[in-house]
Picture 1 (cartoon, rainbow, N blue to C red):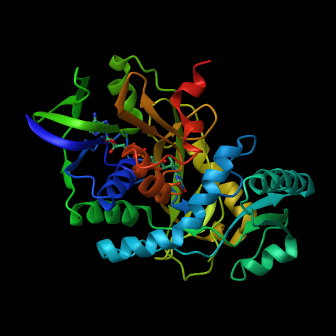
Picture 2: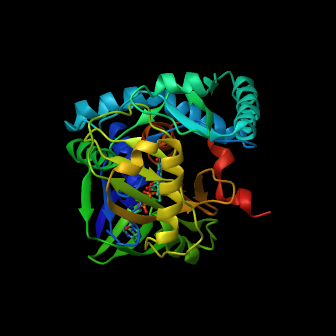
Length: 373
Ligand SMILES: Cc1cc2nc3c(=O)[nH]c(=O)nc-3n(C[C@H](O)[C@H](O)[C@H](O)COP(=O)(O)OP(=O)(O)OC[C@H]3O[C@@H](n4cnc5c(N)ncnc54)[C@H](O)[C@@H]3O)c2cc1C
């Protein structure tokens, strides 16, 4: 049996960011296991937004957490480049959500007012403003807006990245700092020992660990169930489509359309309850394409070349789960949507919390127990 200080189970965005954070804090021998399940490709199949805008309505802790993550993103990307050599293609060019018609724009204004007040209570700014149609047109100068567009909600302080490079960069930096990455190795069982250590059986052997972090996306449910923990997550499919490349026109990413550094337009914003079925459907493709063309009519002239589905890890309130298993304090489970946006905090505050090096007061709001009432 191999002995390990910390075993992280799941090498997606959440596990990789956390494992990197642990190595930044010299946590000792840290091993990151990943099983590469085809049904769990969301860390390679997401939209790449580093986003805080509109997150946390009715949930002040989550609004603050998202805002803090966005504030850390530029520094995080720069540090990752230094540590790994990867440029994650962060474009800190802002972000927008378009509105069709005045009623939708007014709804955005109400939401911005609420989140501004929430963040102010915690001493955080919420730099989001409502743009009318002509102000919105000014921030997307290469694109002509469709007739129904009334305006947008907009912030200068977020952006987008290449999520594939982000995942590669975090895994690479983790290994350069001495962490051990084991792809193609799956954890089968997590068994707490009487002395507080934890035995983990995998497809390749056994580990005796001081601490275990379960960040296995939908695979986490099966690992924590025998420990008496019912993880409150459910699958939600999102479908994305990609066009052929085009000269760079759109520099500000929108929630439903962004142009990547290599010129393709990514289009998406669907959400469906479909268990772990990752297939794409003509209905979702049609509705997303129609929405995108109503926003930017020129997209109707481009060929759509690729599409895929991926299954979000959703919680009932949309906020993350960062939780120690009751009675087994050395086992932590992390389950979340928005692991691109929240990656800087996983590598900083969450890694520190796992190491008992200080707990940010917000983290206690994100326990799995909040759903067991
Ligand atoms: C369409 C779509 C668009 C999205 N857009 C964005 C966005 O713009 N911005 C953003 O922030 N977020 C976005 N997300 C969400 C983001 O992709 C997820 O939050 C993130 O990928 C979750 O990462 P994870 O590591 O928690 O889970 P996963 O990516 O599922 O990683 C878990 C890993 O653990 C492995 N595993 C499972 N069981 C075991 C086991 N027993 N042993 C070892 N390994 C195991 C899995 O195979 C997998 O590799 C989007 C998601 C979708 C579906």
